[in-house]
Length: 212
Ligand SMILES: [Mg+2]
Ligand SMILES: [Zn+2]
Image (cartoon, rainbow, N blue to C red; front, top):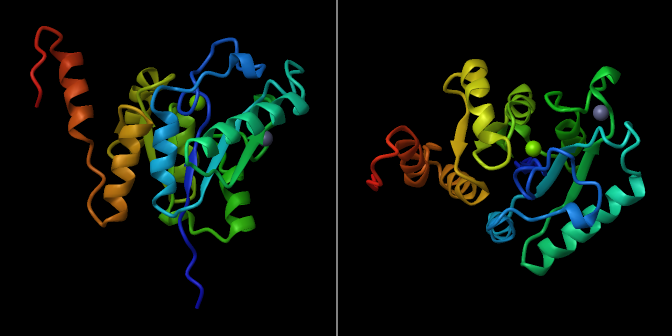
């Protein structure tokens, strides 16, 4: 009996590349988050397929063409491969909020599509994002959500806490999330890393730089 594998889903803006309030509309706007390329290489070492799932309503709002978005993704994938990482496929939702599609996160359509195309077990999958909507898309299909503090993450922490309670994990950045995923794949609980606890401690006690 074929055992379906889990996968790793990555949000794009605020996780792989810096989030921009005015959106990424060309390759010139695309700036990798420090450490992201190395982190994706680390994720690739797990052997699980990696997918990017990104809301790009700017398509249907007419701020960017599909051709330009594809070009950005081609260049992104090339840089990832150049750093030793491999992303199987990029899924994007072109729809705006009011279109009520099934793919714009927090809906899980992009994850479900990947599961169907690649025979994935979503309950053994992870999603890393910087917004509560990423975590919610994962939750809807039984995947583990990890909120990173890069991009809009810090401003989404309370939303996640209110919506999901203890049923989500938090990480400093993608690098930190990779450590947590690897730990989880070894069968250990996906506890926050010492780095994240230290970051929280410093946020709460700015007068000290104690390393926990
Ligand atoms: Mg994002
Ligand atoms: Zn959509």
